[in-house]
Length: 368
Ligand code: GTP
Ligand code: MG
Image 1 (tube, rainbow, N blue to C red):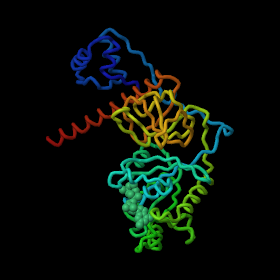
Image 2 (image 1 turned 135 degrees about the vertical axis):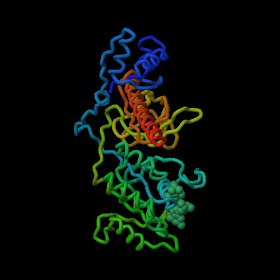
Image 3 (image 1 turned 90 degrees about the vertical axis):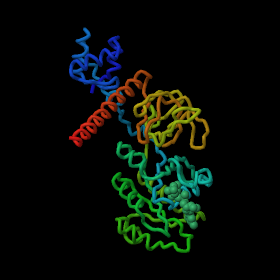
Image 4 (image 1 turned 45 degrees about the vertical axis):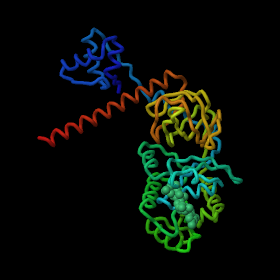
């Protein structure tokens, strides 16, 4: 775990990396400049140059330790709701209806280009919505153990019924243990068949309440604005049952919803703050990168300086573009953040190298 790269070891010994690589070759260990060396190898190598290597023992868990919250520090927070469903079943239209603003108009060809994250203030309470472009991001997040969603709204078009991605969404939600509320959409269409949709959903284990099951199903038309209030009421009811809480009075932690390289601003990440409060100027580690919040923006592109639990914010000031699902942890100082990021980079490189080596060997065997 205390791996060090060839480049880094060379730098610390004040010798050229090529010298180190040459020496490694003589030891029968061909390596490249980015290769991570384990403790024994680096110790052996260093002794060749007249140095002694000490075990520093960097424990990421210690730096990133989660402090337990006292119950009295916890405050209610809005639910985070992910809208899922088959292509074209009306996820974005539903969000659009909820926000009373036309998101679709801004999308190329009406296809969701990214995960939108919206903070919606309703008369009855606040809700954070995530729009998914498909299930990849959700899957990626689950693979990383990042649970960002409290509730899933499963949109099923009444004229199309349960489709492949509907089933995938059901499976993802079940595996993550997230409650599902079904929105049977497009009921305004002449060929809408609500009963058929319910039957198909029941076949996949989602039994509607009116049939004695425990799944709330609301009939809606995102286009005509029918049933939207009922759906929101059900979401807030479900959220109430869950008693969602977070401690706002500590350094922020959250996860990356999406990230991109912006021409003008550099790496930009949409981060969902899950606990604590994020402030401009905060230093953090995010996946394998570190940074300082240079500026942040809410879902309407307005500049803000603080963001509490359940707030989706766009953060500018990263050293690179992280992945959806990466963690975001505010730390005490830059040195610490850089150390964690560097440590993770070394680990990642190690993993990649193992993978490359395996692939190369497999290729080799194929040729034999
Ligand atoms: P992807 O993001 O591409 O997966 O699609 P989506 O699920 O976000 O669907 P979107 O909201 O883009 O809607 C797809 C199409 O269905 C659009 O042409 C919408 O106008 C139409 N649509 C959505 N909701 C309704 C509805 O309630 N009634 C009718 N008639 N059409 C709808
Ligand atoms: Mg969409």
